[in-house]
Length: 145
Image (cartoon, rainbow, N blue to C red; front, side):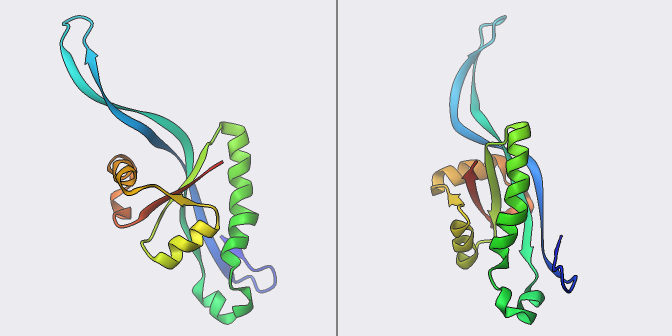
């Protein structure tokens, strides 16, 4: 939770959680070394990451202090990214990702923070393996660290 130093009001909040992204999905034929039986198997590479979840700015705070509009970027740069960068140094995180609500203004805002989207076929593949059911309509966005 991020609070205003002067008023102690809630400005925004976020959570981060460990995760991974799967890449380069393809089919391989695997041969059982004992029976010689061939089976098809889907394989993919993984990339260690962190999911930025539940990132929000308090609308009531912005309405009360309209001069603080844009505080989400400050929270992202001053609070979230330092945590992510420290974790990346410590445990090898390679990607930061999120599942954005499907609102164009929100997606544009995340793009201004440095996030990108995948092309639809790749996003569909990734969603089939990674996206939680409660994020059903959300759009995957990421940035490499």
